[in-house]
Image (cartoon, rainbow, N blue to C red; front, side, top):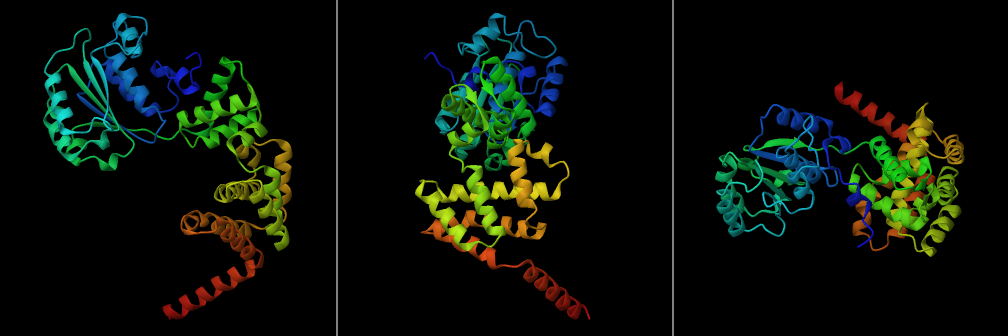
Length: 382
């Protein structure tokens, strides 16, 4: 294959290239520099946050012939053999497809043999929570007292499924979701290196869509680069990922704030005729109303939202039509639909009913209810 996906092409090869996770990198580098290598590590966190990448870099760093400040050199024979996946002493095991007790027993037998070319024999067990109970039991003794030349690195996205006996034998590192700023800077570096044209607003939107995951962000970016023919704009990202365009979201939000019930029905009808998913449309609407709320409540909303100037003006216009309580009520009602959509035979009708109800629901009603609650509470106290 001539083309390599962005998340594979730009997979980090040293600790310095890792995005975020500074708290973990500092601990691991200190251990390497002080020659205090543990026998078992547990890497846990959401997908795409660097667990496997850091595990591979750590395996290289502790075996590198010419390490530099805890980082592998990536030039010696050991580093190159690990990078090319030809090193017999670094074994990556997928627990999802090798989860039986027989396979763990086989692993226990292999652990007895010393490494061939490396200082340490490293076992990286990915998705370790997929192991069966009997497989975990078979792993316990080896995990607690492995030979001095063996290092286990367990990686999982669901740490709550691991037995306490396994957790107590590992040095645990919790991987955090990355900030939008970190993802945005990483995307900017990759786009510049790949000669891809981009708008800053497009990078901000891609970082938001990534939800803190580097791999998810780069996968979405890959799709947008292909769609836009290496000219990634804000609008091209919206079109590529199938988001509702801002014009439609502005229109329906104005209809809700102006209590235009006919306008709400017409807009939802247009969205439905375009083949848009009603559930996704509701999610996009929540995000849009949230942006309006940010404009209404924050002085530095331009720095928070990082949107084109024309879209900021649209949000300012809508923010002037409502107060905070109304916007919060809209967010609460539409956000609650996420669960209801799962059990509804007609998501469109459910969304229409909810938005029409918001038109007739007055803020004065909320205040009256709050006042009645306070009166009842005072009576109960007395």
